[in-house]
Length: 191
Image (tube, rainbow, N blue to C red; front, side, top):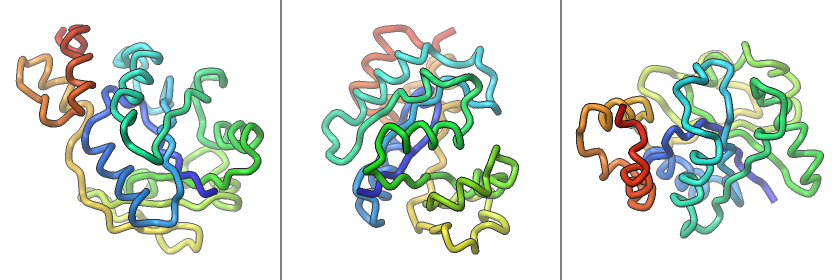
């Protein structure tokens, strides 16, 4: 079984994430998509993140009725900050029957050569890359393990959603209904 790993802080998860994951599931050879909820991305300030379990809960709310999608908290028990190479090693060890691939945007592919052990990742895992307006994927887009996927270009960002909520804008159409309801009830991102 081929599993696409979709890493993110999901702070919060939004419809753009769901559209990309669904496209990968429906229009590539991936059998499942797993949302890997990251406790601390090495490139983001931890202070801007909601609690890990709250973000995982929102992901589960968003995907509970979507076949072929699931979440994993594997990184919650790994040393911080989280590095993809370490997470992949842990997942391969825990699920030896699965063939793991990475799902990422072209912007991440462009800087992939800066990732820890990126050569090893490419030796053992395929990359499924969705388009971004600001990036073409760089030199690695020609690599045999890299699949450039013609998924819809999504311009919704969690940062935008958090700022809009703080500014008292209605962003409910940009979020799965249950996620918006949870955010609103918990008063997340309002300050």
